[in-house]
Length: 107
Image 1 (cartoon, helix red, strand yellow):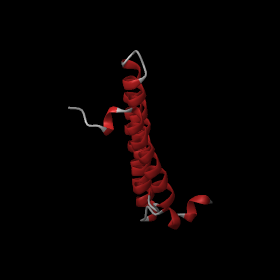
Image 2 (cartoon, rainbow, N blue to C red):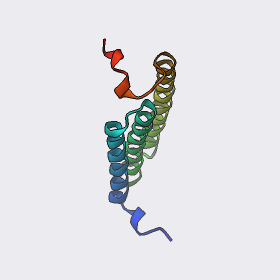
Image 3 (cartoon, one colour):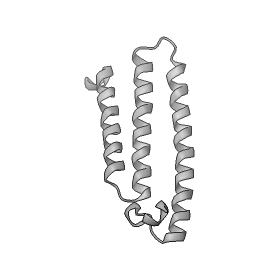
Image 4 (tube, helix red, strand yellow):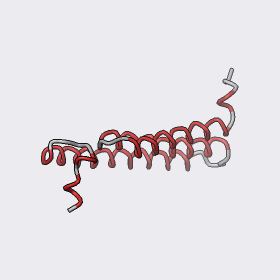
């Protein structure tokens, strides 16, 4: 038996919206690079969930949404690798990853 809530497109869209909102809130409220990176991952996962939900319920070709989701997952992995390397480099130079304390980067 299929659960009642997750048989509809709207449930997936609400879940994706929650992921996007949590990610956006995390970017705004988190002072460190790692927290911001995790928040961006939440936003990308919300986008991937949207692609899969629209593909499952509306698209006649089921491979299009899966292809876009795989592309988003690859993009997220590349973004995480680049951001973590930048965070390590910033930490080695400044001994912190808090964005408020990195005002020297503006100059």
